[in-house]
Image 1 (cartoon, rainbow, N blue to C red):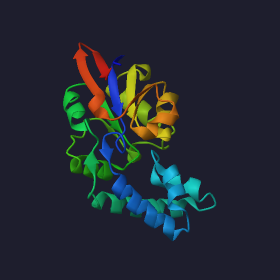
Image 2: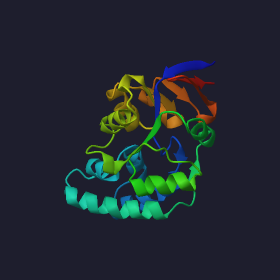
Image 3: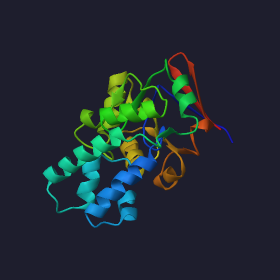
Image 4: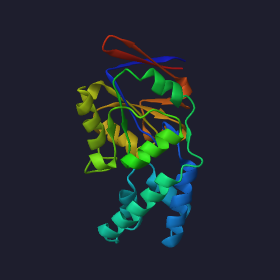
Length: 216
């Protein structure tokens, strides 16, 4: 079955949507879980789509914010340095090439150095418009990042389509008034408007100011 969607701009999450960084993320967060006597499996259920310190606040609710921020900086440095196992999601290279001259943005909970390192490791071009952890005051599921990207592109939020994989990201996009294409199996239970197994099922073409997204 083929689905066609019209939009003025496309906003893309990074981890789990464009880039498979699960190998690195699991190594780093498993080590952190062990340090704090937490079940790594339970930790992994919380962290997707959020900034690290926001995940820590959920996992260790009585812990001082300052401690979370220190841990977050340390983990970001490690994740930025460790790119072994970081690869592009199927179809991501072709999609980013198709979007090269079209309105699009990266909206990620990663820091700018981490996003730059992972996009490069996966062989993907970083868009001119990037909203990272440094760009916002609130992490997904807050809609701030997506709204900032729409504003930077000069496009109404309602005319943006978001590609996301996590519950936090899908919630953030919907709170911003945007439609969501869920990417991968993790997106299934979280209420995305459309679902694709990966980005190989996505085609984008432009007709004037309108982008046509075809899901196969």
